Amino acid sequence: MAMPLKSLGRRAVLAGLPVLLTPPLSWHRSAQAAVRRLEVVAPWELRGLEPAQSGFVFHRMQIAEALVGTDLRGALAPALASRWAVDPDQTTWRFTLRSGAKFHDGTPVTAASVVSALERARSGGGALRDAPITHIRDDGETVVIVTSRPFAPLPAYLADFSAIILAPAAYGGDGQVRELLGTGPYRLSGREGTRRIEAEAVPEAALGIRYTAYTAVPEAETRALMLQGGQADAAMTLSPAAWERLARAGFDMWLAAIPRVRVLKVNAAHPAFASLALRRAISLGIDRVAIARSVLRSPDLAATQLLPPGLAEWHRADLAPLRYDPVEARRLIEAAGYARRRDGLYAKDGRTLGFELFTYPERPELPPMAEAIQAQLRELGLEVTLRLGDSSAVVQGHRDGTLQAALIARNFSLLPDPIGTIAADFRTGGAWGAMNWQDRDLAAAIERYESTFDASEAADVRRSIVALLHHHLPTIPISWFDHRVGFSARISGAVVDPLERSYAIDRLAWRS
Image 1 (tube, rainbow, N blue to C red):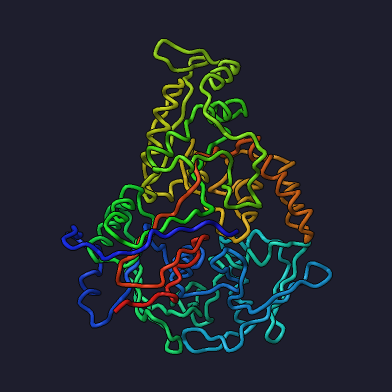
Image 2 (cartoon, rainbow, N blue to C red):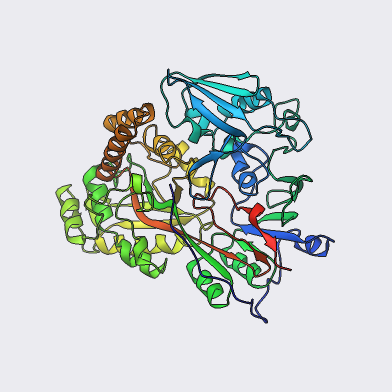
């Protein structure tokens, strides 16, 4: 899972840079506090204390841990479980808990408390719901998990943010999370609505940064200005233009090639996407290189298949690459019975070929990319209308069937093994994946991959899965991803997790 990583180095922060005139939320209170607090800004709001809703923030800020973790190469690593093994029957797994682990309320982490948290995660909306687990039990200092069939990716599923382990006292009488009591090196010390949390290092942790905060700042330029003006120490998900400006100003800027892909999520029940020929035509009508060059400032990010070369096990160099070929695209459209009108648009039986394209500004590059796709497909002969909104509308539109197409950024490292996201998106059509599309061969290949513990067989099945997705285009890849992050000169030790699972704050220290 390792992905290439690059830092542009650090120089002194320039004086006289613009500052944010109206800082969000508690900036004034925090700035006036008698503590030195590391300020992290990112686009994503918290939607509550439930792990399935906001566990990714608590995990990234190292407030909570799952049973299994990952290292900074993307490989599985111990977290609350110090080690694990599967029995010869390949259905019984044993996870030994880390000795001496305690929750933030001081109570010990026991196998019983872990079992309770995992059972709760199974019944929620996270990845464990999709794992074929029959039961979970405690066996002294060991958590035993039994599956209904051999299921090799189970440790990766247990690394999901929705499976973070909270103390029994975290839950109220109604079973809902009332207080976030995790096991990470930082504990939650304050929360302001959906926009901000504050944390401090647990007493026994000898860390370079004692106080931290996470603030959700949806506007990319505002995040950049906060870093530039000294109101933030780490700014996540920056636009290419802002990233380049900050790099020139001497900030510590990082590019991380991460397993996230920008795709067109399409509704296969909609006339524009109902046939493979039309999905291929639309794919051929998109000039990915031009979009990557103009919007992302990197033509190498144009996707030639779903998953990028950095995911070497899931990338096939022998596949014919996705390409721009408007002549072939028009041939496929006309073969499907569409004729071009005088206004340049294709139509059949009085119905114009086109669709509504939804996207969201939380990722700042998506709206301009959507505009480029709209213009390119208009030139091809399709009428595309744009709509912007909150990213939650993707899920709602999938569930109620109203979504026609969406330009989204899909994370294939939600679990350390991409099979978790692939299975959720394409076997049963998860809310961020294929819509009104299924394929029996793909479903069989996914199940075969999940059930094998043989590395050679798993490699063969991966190749089949990649080929099937490339052929059928249930979602249409547009570009791969460089994660653009910046850090202030006040801190040392910055790194970027290639799976976006942690901000690695425990590695940081104040420079002076």
